[in-house]
Image 1 (spheres, one colour):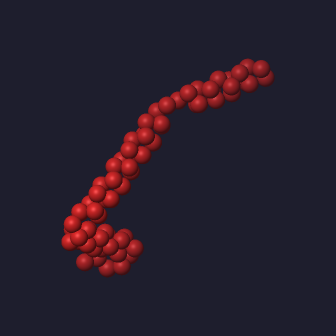
Image 2 (cartoon, one colour):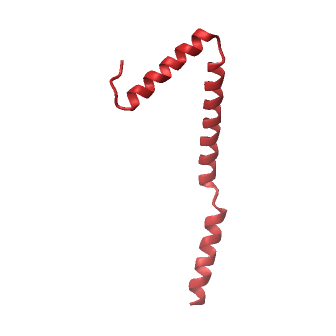
Image 3 (tube, one colour):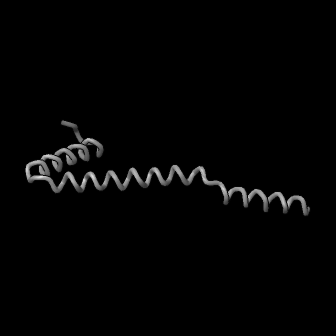
Length: 70
């Protein structure tokens, strides 16, 4: 029984110390922040570009919600 408890204890410590998944999460967060910064930067450009990009994003939303795509 004591050996079983020690194996559970060692397994949980190894699980806590594992860092491979943390790198993937960090890269995902970096990509998300950069993407948001690009969207904000593109929207602040001259009015006609901001309107054009808003129209483009609207067409993407329309296609993804199941309506007809143009």
